[in-house]
Image (tube, rainbow, N blue to C red):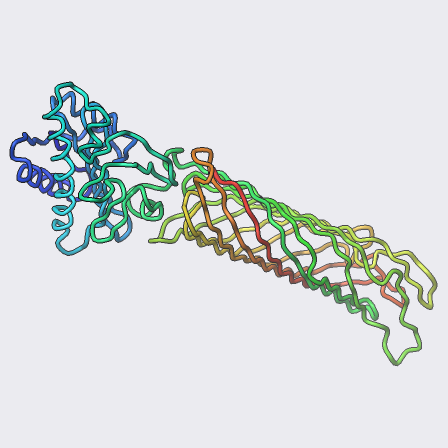
Length: 458
């Protein structure tokens, strides 16, 4: 058999330990080392054919490939053994402790020797160049290349070695590459690498939204307070990611609502009567779209990101009839408005689109500038906008629910937004009672929303 050089930190010592254990445990078989082909960038059962071909080219019955991968504070050793005809007979990984890591290397190499001993005995007893699947099963080694895709890696239904599965048995309760994608993410290779590092997701969501809006002006009777109880909110999302270094997300939201409102009556010392508004509630509908482009960097188990983009929001409010001492007029008590805003900020993630299981995200965005317009009536001639947006999202991914076609996720999300608008000049909206146009108005808006959703991830 041939043991190829181990890639990664301190790989030479790992290869020597593996070779030594095989030589000691299998004295009747020749064990030799060979250089690792440069094309081998990782250790994965998908490269079984390459390892088998390399073993055959070297004139050996079995080839052993291994890798030491370091990510963050964790170091992991992975060993893959393949027969010359491309059958996987061993596929295991184990975390290496900081103190005396060679003990874990030796233990994993001993498991390898046990598996190879059974395979080599079968090869010796066989009269043909290949071994039938029945004979392999009799020798307690299932070397067929059956596999199913789970997240990042190929989950091998592999040989039973000392009562354990070759692809999933662990040393000291450590996890194998094929069993837990979270381990693979952090240690050897990013999850679901079979489709390189590109992932995409689309989803839908439903929940509730509430907001409070307050417009004030020095013009007597021109202040306005708008309140919305919890109303139905629907939305959709699209996400694209190339690993963590480039991400794109777009969300769409929509709601329709009947708005309650209060306004400042005239000075109680005056004789002007408070106007009557018909109908007392304003029917309104709103839509919003947010698009973000970002990049991220790993900090241990977390991914910190910087994002920037734009958001578009609009609300259309019905007109009302105002009856006051100055007469009757049709007005848009709450002006319809549109807003296009530049947004930028940071995100903090646990996991990404390729991660199996639970992922989380916290985001914080600033709104440094926006173009805000009202119609048909206005609270000023122009408006400047500042604000902040934040959210917290949790998801649970079943990335291979549909096999190689992808998976699904479930999510819950809470959003909070605060905006401050300052209007300059004189507006066309008039104060109640006096009928004077408002001027130098200011507006503050706070909204809170929560949704639950489900989506497809590829």
